[in-house]
Amino acid sequence: MAASSANPAHAFDARQHLAGLLRTALASVAPSQGLPDILLERPKQASHGDFASNLAMQLARELKTNPRQIAERLVRELPASPFVAKVEIAGAGFINFTLTPAARSAVVATVLAAGGDYGRGAAKSERVGRRLQVEFVSANPTGPLHVGHGRGAAYGASLASLLAFAGYEVTREYYVNDAGRQMDILAVSAWLRYLDLFGEPLPFPPNAYQGGYVREMAEQIRQAHGDRYVHPAEAVLACVPETDDIEARLDGFILAGKDLLGEDWSYVHSHVLSEQLADCRADLEEFGVHFDVWFSERSLYDTGMVARAVEKLEKAGHIYTQDGAKWFQSTAFGDEKDRVVQRENGIYTYFASDIAYHLNKFERGFDKVIDVWGADHHGYIPRVRGALQASGADAGKLDVTLVQFVSLFRDGQKVSMSTRSGEYVTLRQLREEVGNDACRFFYMLRKCDQALDFDLDLAKSQSNDNPVYYVQYAHARICSVLAQWDGDESTLAKADLAALQHEREFALCARLAEFPELVQAAARDYAPHTLAFYLKDLAGDFHSWYNAERVLVDDMVMRQARLALALATRQVLRNGLALLGVSQPMSM
Image 1 (tube, helix red, strand yellow):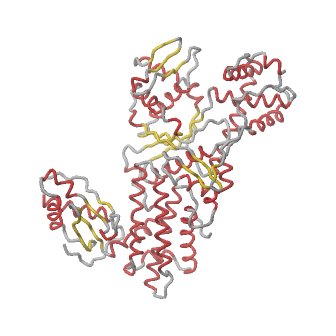
Image 2 (cartoon, one colour; image 1 turned 180 degrees about the horizontal axis):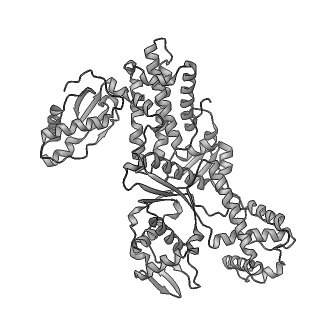
Image 3 (tube, one colour; image 1 turned 90 degrees about the horizontal axis):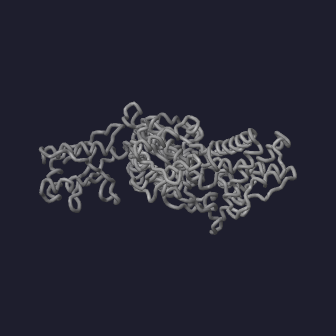
């Protein structure tokens, strides 16, 4: 197959073009054969060309012919293309394509024309079944966010941004656990610390919230309302059972607070909730993590959704009563044991509200619901899916991704994550030490379901060993070159790219061309970590080229072409870093 010298169009899509050539050839070789999905992969070795297809091996069984012979026939029938310099058959029947230099560098013009939209998927109006909800973090508002929550926040935010960039309509949601026992524990913890301020000390429950932030909230209540909520320690202890069961004693303290404070209990409860939720919001906002919806668990009870969800399961025959409690038959749906949805005292369980919440998600019309949970919630997946299935919902619309734990290291030693006083390493402390950019990027350096070792010293270092520094330095380096040139960047869209002839330049072009493919694959697999890996590789290709070739050469045509390549690289670095929530500094 001969190749002509025609110039490729600026919006040249090599994969789409080569697939078209193969379809034409297939129509000649096997006209009655249905069209399979034509896969074109980038070979690991540059000597194998720019793209490789296994089409011949896909057809071997149907055609009952040796795949290499099929490959030979397909190559003979390939139409001539101005974009293909060479086609070879390798191994058992791979068809390897080598593009012309003009086709390889055409991506530069494509990137410059698209700008911030390079890599973006189809418009929402062109998508069907693309309304997604990503619910992440959703930590109980009972204390500051810790470094584990930070990983879930970074992952969820990057995933949501990636899905939106890939063309989906995404809603980012935080589920506020503002009902139930944990909030009661936080309220009574603050109240007991408040009583201590007025000389009414009580044995503080070891299973109550211990952190200094609890004392701060107690002081806030004292400053706002003085001694209004003070009751004698003896009156409080009278409500607390004498038992070694620490949970029963804690429940006794909660009962004391509710009985002695009466209507004032709701103020204490509301104060600690609003304080911790506001702190959580502020922390996340400062981290560059934003939500479209903050959904209240309490609203599920206030509107009767929890009761209706249990009633729905009961009518469908999936609820039975035992010892006065109502149980969901979750073992019938793959769970290890049945689960209580309503206790004998009539109080609904957390699981019941979770069922109602997920049914509400589906009622809102999302085509896919994505939950980002901590790895310790792994066993929760089958019971939630089972409850959805039992309720008549399409459980296949629920995807759950698990985020593994984080370990901090300093000077090669593992950092203690908590103390006896109940303090732990917070997300805010981590951000203050290493910065938002390092946090966001380092959290993406492992697949979310793999444990992450976070090297604090590396995250703070200004060296090429620090991946976020390495990537940001590539962006800053390009900005510096463009500033030295001091020309009109818009003119570079018309640069003569034929001047790009070196293999390092073509390797950089090939990396730029991978970005749209990577966006779609990462969105499909819920894998934003692959974007972090890609940016490291892109920065490496740029640094390698920059160190080997001068950009601001005397030859104007060559200078413009190389500046255009540098500008396109900066654009893709910007697009990728923005998806990860990482800044793009112009100088470092």
